[in-house]
Length: 107
Image (cartoon, rainbow, N blue to C red; front, side, top):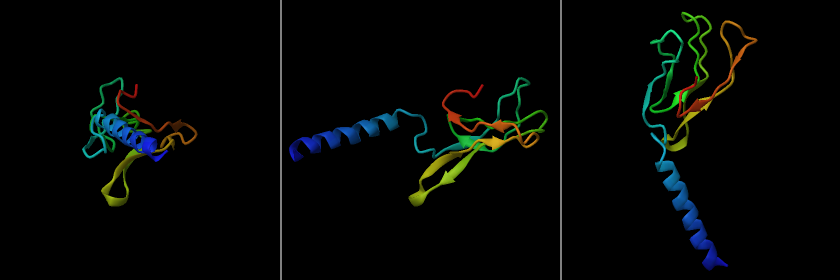
């Protein structure tokens, strides 16, 4: 049994490492300004996001209703993560902005 288990564990670890290295900026070590997309070509940043990733922050209209749903979180031993949460809109608290991040664009 142990002769079969060791190769399976080794293959699983190798496959996991290969999949992580295929992602851009694995480990979220590099961060850049988050400039939420708007139909009026927004250039105002709201928080930061991992380089090559997009957080679903909302800038609102002229800053009204801006909502930050994601942020950098640090863990033990210097590990870095993205913390996202569904967050009420700052202008209309009954309207919740979904928190997510993606490799694509949010809209």
